Amino acid sequence: VKVAATSIVGKDHVRLIVTDESRKRLPALAFRCANEPFGQALLRLTGKTVHLAGTLRLSTWQGAEETGFTVEDAAEVAQ
Image 1 (cartoon, helix red, strand yellow):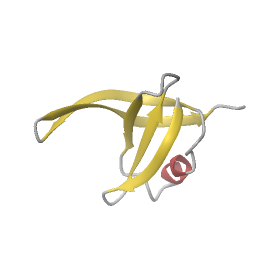
Image 2: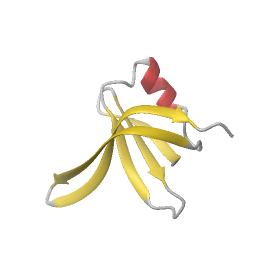
Image 3: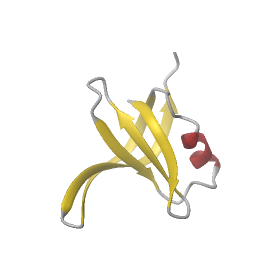
């Protein structure tokens, strides 16, 4: 997948927006890592193609369901 955007959310979570070849977007979160080396590496991935490991999740907030991904590991794809 390609990382379209990254940001810090809350106190120390990293949010990524990833896209596939069809440009469909999926929000992804890595929890409690923004101040750690892993979180800092994630924040530098905007525009890069990566492999992600983690868990798909379905969350409901204010009555709306959203599919997301919890990131446990990431690796940049060598070009």
